[in-house]
Image (cartoon, rainbow, N blue to C red):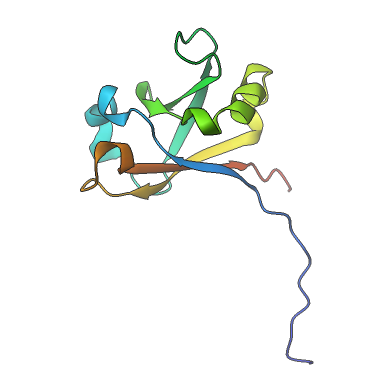
Length: 116
């Protein structure tokens, strides 16, 4: 028993992960060579989106990559709408440009760790 380390519980920071929806229809191809594992992306709520009032777009620099899928966007949309985007960290979690465009990039969203 003395070889076992005692670990303090730390809750996971993971909120959601998803494949970028609509990648083939936006500006992702303009920056595809810049996108890599761990690359930060920006989440932007689009309350005026005519198809989904909870739409959350994914951007890299000023290029729209696509969206958080509708079935996974409600909580993120609410946080962003009320100005809590600064607590979120969104990064590319998976890259495989050989896959279908809707499966090439996966993003993970986590709570930022602001402990000092």
